Length: 308
Image 1 (cartoon, helix red, strand yellow):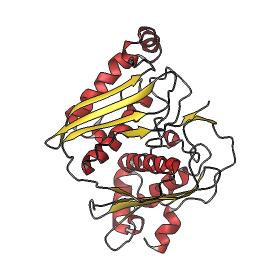
Image 2 (cartoon, rainbow, N blue to C red; image 1 turned 120 degrees about the vertical axis):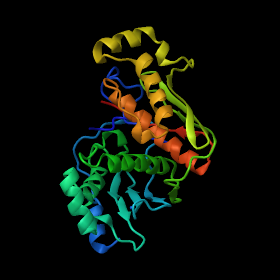
Image 3 (cartoon, one colour; image 1 turned 30 degrees about the vertical axis):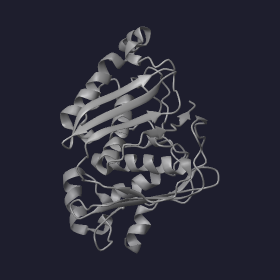
């Protein structure tokens, strides 16, 4: 499954080939042995890459992210390196314990997870890292990252953190991004907005948190006149025929699911609107991270738009 979603400079976005493919916007943590297995290849493949038509290109440098809290004995550390051409040349996503040892080297854990899920950190961590230097992702097209079967949660976390690193790279911000993972969300309203229009629409998103729970979610796709895609009668009619759903149905469903679960990871993908669902979750995760820090500054997404 691909996260055909949104990415940016406060978020990046990979565009889908189909305007009506159900999807509102385009798309937008060691030991020496673990470094060897969790770092990706240093050069991207040379096959044709989709052209970036909107959104800022990533700036050369190394960009880092680190979780502040351990979960089940591990936390994520990650970095990406971008060359002068704006392409990711290496990724060092890893999950490490308090001794700095990688989950890749946890023999018992890997053996047990392999039996249950059919995969394990020794397999999926290198695979995820390698994906960032592939021709389809290296320019910042996070929406083209595949979810690894059996490691969905880790894949989603990887996508979220990659997006935030790409956003930092677009802005040339090399300060380490600190994620207060697991922290209770602080009360307030948290907002995100895309900068660039895709198929005449861009995402606006706000959540309200009270007593550590999401009490309101307002995800929308709006045009230059501020009108919602929900109210675009022709678009809704045409998409309904093609995908069996439309913005009038899936946008309220996604917002309702987030309020019900108060956790982006528990939001279900709406059938026929996979791209928009993945975009919704990706942005909701960023808003959740902001709420965990109590950062109410609006996240402006210089979303990348890619040609077909």
